[in-house]
Amino acid sequence: MSSYPPSGPPQNTPQTTTLRQRLADLRGPAVPPRPLDARALAALAANPGCGRRALLDGAGVDKTALAAALGSPAAFGQSQFAIIRGNSFEAKVKGDGGAELLRLVHSRLDAGTEPPGPGARVPDLTAAGPEGRAARTALALREATAGAARGGWTLLDHPMLALEVAGSPAYLEPDAVVVHPDGRWTVVEIKSFPMIDGAADAAKVGAAARQAAVYVLALEKTAEKLGGATVGHRILLVCPKDFSNLPTAAAVDIRREHAVTRRQLERLTRVEELAAALPAGLSFDPGRPAEELTEAVSAVDAAYAPECLAACELAFHCRERARAADEVNALGRSVRGELGALTTVGAALAAAAGRASCEDPTATALHRAARLRAEALEQAPARTAPEDAACPC
Image (cartoon, rainbow, N blue to C red; front, side, top):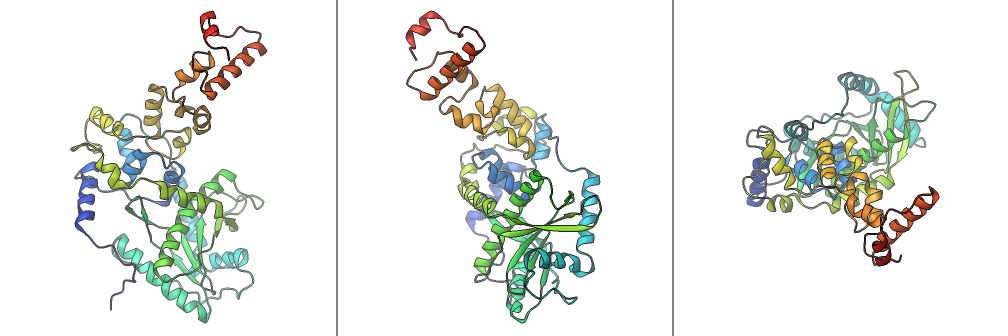
């Protein structure tokens, strides 16, 4: 009998083999694929209109190396010290068979049930490759859910979850998943930022919630394939307490982030459609000349916004291109949405000066706002008499 559950590793078909070869050609024959993680998927879901990021992430392109080759290296990421501190804290939380972690899950999410004892199950999830680990995780989840009727808790340490995104498989690794005595599954996020007086930085909690929403989506897909299980939409966020290294936790409701992430990921154009629209021979291999890479990147449409600076390695390159093209995207999504058909800064300034069609309500509103501003500053409107006569608004 096979050890794989019904949701075992995907089968190779001529179509998938051709797509994989095409994606390998895009990133470079000698360049290994960079796997998608939950942080990248959360950022991708926040900007689903960016075909450039969808294609590069789907093809496994190393965007950090690509940005450096383009002359616009990324300037964000965790320091080595922060990574070491985070790993040390996670090991402390999961020590002694996960006793402290399960205690926090019980006290914050399931206080009405029997508290976890020393005999909580922690199955071995070791397997060959991400596909094997995902299959082993699914099997462990099925066994833990079936055994939940006999009582007891199960802790899955760094399980591997599979999720298809835009036609490309992604393998995700949450910090932990807990199976409750009633068979419910809960995602646990362990972060190294502090929780002071029971509250943590709102921006960091929001980022953790968006990341956890991706894990919950992947768990739901696994639950569907295994015949159904309840996946909690309240996750446990574990952080250091105050200024110590002692763990504390809070339940975080991610229903909003879950709904938004699911909708945005479903909107993504499939990777094969994006790849099929590119000319033959195009490659994002970081070893190629910068001019060739610039041309290759420009062949894929992007949707730059200032928020990309905190989430995408190519943000500085895309910002430079957006500014060079005079795009209003560089001013932010809210400004882009307000300006409607006025897609360039020059067009918006012309509308404010009264040099645009009166039939465009956005241009009319901009011109009125500019006139009111000029009057408030006791300045004359910046337009000439013939233009005033041509535009009575």
